Image (cartoon, rainbow, N blue to C red; front, top):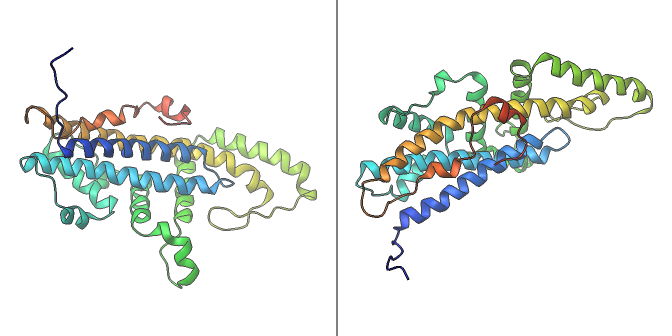
Amino acid sequence: MSNLSMPKFPPSFLLLQQEGYLISSSLTNGLTELRSAHVHNKGAFYTSLFNLSVGFERLLKAIVIIDHMLNHQLAVPTKKQLQVRGHNIVDLYDECERIGLNRNSPILGRPQLDAIDNEFLQLLSDFARVTRYHNLDALSASHTSPDPLVRLNQLIVAILAQDVPKSQKDKILKQAGIIVNQIDDITFTLMHGLDQRPLSTSDALSLPGLHEQSARFAVLRIIKLLAPLRDLLAEVSHGAYGQGPVPAFPQMQEFLEWLWDDRQYVLRKRKWP
């Protein structure tokens, strides 16, 4: 039998290890749900927003926590220090941008992101803080924050206009039009879109395909936001080496090994990881 004994890992290692599983699971579930979401599967949009907001927040906080540990002799931030940051994903992203500059592992600052990516980060941040309660709040309050599905619909429209090839959109609309011409005079459509507006028969037939195409490119945008964050997470995680016989935190980037920033691969992929 071996005389080697199992090293005793500190609580910070084990807790951040568990956090790594949570981050990975939240992000992959969010991407998978987004890929399957469309106007007739609205629940998947909500599941995606829940998971992506949690995944982004916890990923950003992992970077902040490990950077703090490296700057404070492996002492973790206090609960109060973490609570001050709340669930504000936009502020956490800005903080990670500063960390990236200090550690020579830059991520794009929000001024360098386009309008769609900025709105996506703001949507996740607002959903994490407030708008996940919108449906219930709107039942009893005259003034509420914007409906997250309405905002998501605006992003879908923007991605369709900017990212999705015209030929693909035209093909979907043509196929829907052929069916509509055959059934429109005998069909009554009682459905609502993501913005709660009534759908025509043409909308009901074309929007699932249009939403699928938009989701492909939305996922690609998310992956391009995540890839530099994974690299920054790797950079701070490497600081565990040389800090003692047993690392104070895992190599957290290993929980994101599935994150491959390849355009064709991402556009084809439906289920994550």
